[in-house]
Length: 418
Image (cartoon, rainbow, N blue to C red; front, side, top):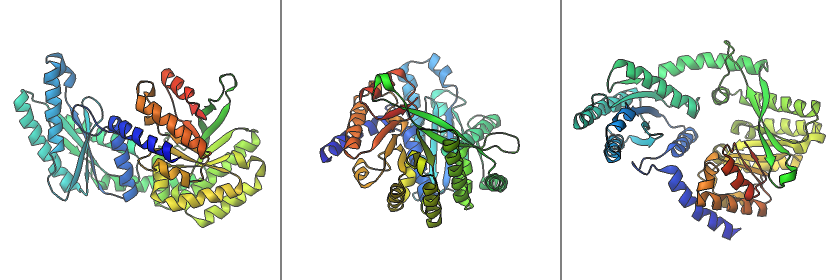
């Protein structure tokens, strides 16, 4: 086990460099942005998120050489790197795609965000003079929202960016926290109503099939996925729904209702495979919930082993001791546990031996483009070897590319969804 862990850690160094930094600018990439935002959730940080895009980069590229294009992007990125207006302020820039960038400023209020935007505007105008470009970039900013999720916050920043474009060249638009407060009052009432009336559906997604035998692939596991709608019959993002339920202490009721619906689904439809049920950290830390869950499992002994209770890696990392204790409770009842979106940034591989988990589901970054990445191949081989020694089954999530799927199949991990 020690030898495999050492090999894994060596591979992780190579993988993390590729996943975390842009070769041209040296800025962090989207996987690092997502990890950093998750850490802000964990530490309850406050701040602002800025969406910044170079205007008309494609048009500039048509009339300039690759060297000139790279030089322009590099100098643009230096503006973002050096924008810190206060020693107490923590800022970090990220490159998402070719012309799309994000800036995070921790410990930053509306006034601070306004100062950053004003300074960026000046710097963009100066850069524009150097390159004879009138419109360099626009900026949209939104407060960090502890009740939101990553896609929603990036979307909110992007909507602010679109408003900034309407104002004029190099301009900015900033959402303030009052916008969020008004939104939250409406959301709270809606979420309470949905949970109190159990007015939501549970669907089943991420069909994971075994990869052990070519001729005998079978369904290993599905994931229960909650679908709730607002008053206009639009789907509510589940991340927002759960975050609000957690804030107003309704999430335990919600998790109970989901579990009851899943148990009914398995029983009524004579389901034979495992069903993964996502739980919040609030629920697994609550003694009354644990007692309730143990009773529900004991009442349904025929399907006990098919219930797989899921916690994301970054949620488990918030309170390792609570998660370990929960795993012990679940196994004493005969059910199973899974760490979802497993990332070594949150749970180091050497810690896996301390957990009594049945499954880990790898974060997509580890399997995306694995066919062209030696270090990723070695990581998957090593993590699977380690998991076999620890009696843990490895599942890959949403493997889209056929060539990636062939690689994962070769290493005979337990299963994969596509």
